[in-house]
Image 1 (cartoon, rainbow, N blue to C red):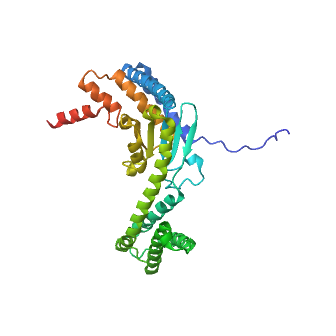
Image 2 (cartoon, rainbow, N blue to C red):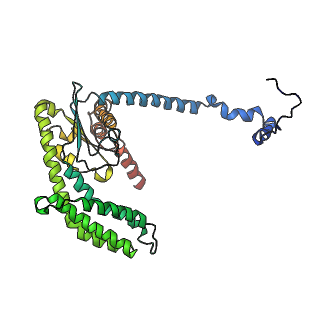
Image 3 (tube, rainbow, N blue to C red):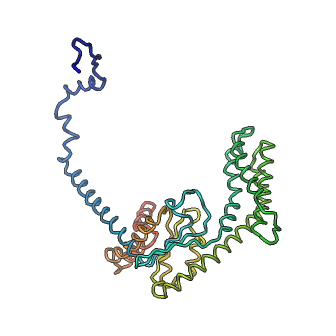
Amino acid sequence: MPHAKNKELWSFDDGETFKAAANLHRTSVADLLVPCAHAGNQDQALHDGIVDIHRTMRREYAANIRKVGRNVYPLIVARDTQPEKDRLDVGRQGLGGIYTLYLETGETHTIQPTPREYERLKCLSHIPLGLFSILSPYFSEHGARTWAPKLASFGEQIAGALEKLPMRSSKTDPVDDISRRILSMSDEFTQNTLSNGNPTAESLESYARAVRPAIRDAMDIAAKLQIDACMTALLRWKRDLGQEAWRQLHVLVTTIWPVSEHSPRWQMFRTIMHPDTVGTHLIVGEGIRTDEDARDLVGRIVADRLAARLILGTEDERGQRMTQCISSRTDVVADSAYKALQEMYD
């Protein structure tokens, strides 16, 4: 279709940045050149060249530790939760241990030995923490009611679970007994708080004091269930692998900082791993999200140990200490930093 002649076009107005750019006509080339002629700065060029060397090192290092991590056998990754990619309910906790064994043959075996009662007891034990999380922001906000909808919803979940408990005698099932005790006291506290409209630290503490014996019973029974089931399964793996392979075993226990020390998984492996290697082959990794991340971390630790031995040496005390640093959680510059601090305060 031909364009219509004599048609007025929209008005072409120069933009503000275009108008401002007119100032550049009065700027000298020398002034514009300074930031662009970066290659002429020898010190900066040297620095950039060294940084580029380090970038290459990091790429090669990352590729190497990834391959080393897939060459460590046998390896067990001991998680407390399922990998997120393997379950729809990514917020689920309290599974008591998911263990994946990697073998040199390419075989991979994953087990989750802990019975469901463990998860139930752990979830019940967290109810006071849920109530704290909902109410504690309002302990100093007397008269506020914005907490009420969340508490009411949480209370409905508690009451619903209480209604689902079987009517059988608690004497025959201690898990049911603990469930009823925790749910009943939590339901009562929730209803009282909604009724009086005044959540306080004192009222939560009073409720917690009452429910505490049941929580402690739940923890003891849950730990017993976990240890019995997991140890039975892990000892079966130990028998199947044989003494020599078990001696070479590396274990990575994934965790987060608040529960990183003396977890049940760490305690179990500390008990059954070979005494000659448990100190170096039992590793706790914080913030690990996937098994692939776990294998990368193991690869880094194993590769760093050889690198430290070859590069830093063990001929003198300093070399030995630096090698130990690279082979542990201690920063390799720890001694140097401490020396510098001492010099500052001498």
